Amino acid sequence: MNARALFTEHPRAVGETYLQHLRNAAGFGLALVAAGAACLVHAVLPFVFERTASQAVERLHARMRARHRS
Image (cartoon, rainbow, N blue to C red; front, side, top):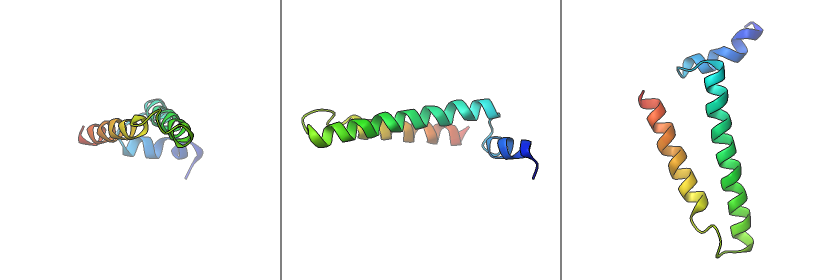
């Protein structure tokens, strides 16, 4: 496999260009990091961010399912 294919094979398999995949994957990653940070704060202060992480996961799941339908 050549170097270019390493960067384009998976994005093409999911119907995206490299840059589209970069944007989508980075967006998911940042949302998950934010949800994880909310979980950590919630662990110490249980009255804060009570539904933040679960709502983020629900939004990401819906977004991922919508992408797979197209």
